[in-house]
Image (tube, rainbow, N blue to C red; front, top):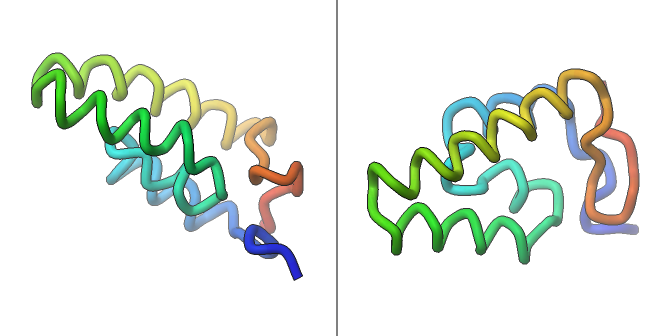
Length: 80
């Protein structure tokens, strides 16, 4: 059984909306390397500068989640 099997659309959307700048939705779906990058950008560049960069990144992810193009790390669709 895959670690990313059965990841839900709703949970991914909520994590992206509320904790997206920290990469929580990416941790949840198995995109660990990019999630760590988002977290480090937010924390190391600074709250305002890092949040702007990762906020834009999270917004792009949110759009991709909504239109169905965001998948888990192993390529599975999010469960609706």
